[in-house]
Image 1: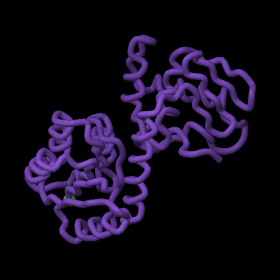
Image 2: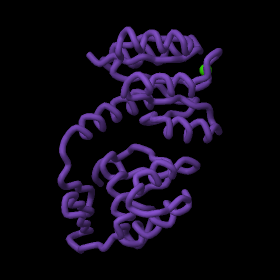
Image 3: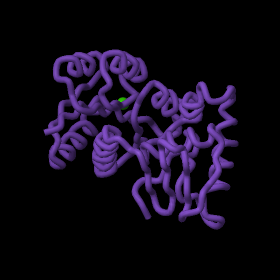
Image 4: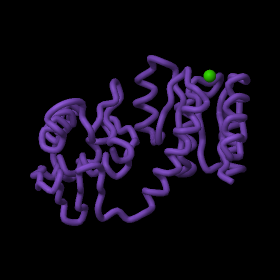
Length: 228
Ligand code: CA
């Protein structure tokens, strides 16, 4: 049974989340503050941590930093509505996903399951990524849409591949910029917007909202989860 550590100082929310995750087949530990959370993370080695960033005492982002120093445990951060900076800093400190309060326990459970699925997929060697009509031949750095070959620059290819390797994961512009390290000399996050614009022009359908590379407002971009 996968073990989840829920770090939440609001006892009512903690209980609801615990019961829901239990019912979904997970083992759950609750910690009400950062110090206890770090102790439990060390002692119990959970498979995943759900971390509320709004904690009394030790700051949630600080707890995240400390967790990351100790292990690669997957983390979903919980942020208050409107706190986009926390969300971005959380992702850049290595959180795998975030949910925004108020959230439904059902939504959180779905995110937990999706994250476990993504982590399993990350282990598998992906020579070829297929979503809808899009196909990426990774070793050949070749992209086709509906069998039609698409010419991407090395930077565009790197950005697309980073997103497509982990469908559903939200990447900040800063994280995408990091993946270009060594490919191009670009130091502005706006450069990512320009790459995404070019990628979309080349791979997305002419009409309607983007099918593959989706915008996450105020945070960054993500690749569409699952096939159409
Ligand atoms: Ca809180």
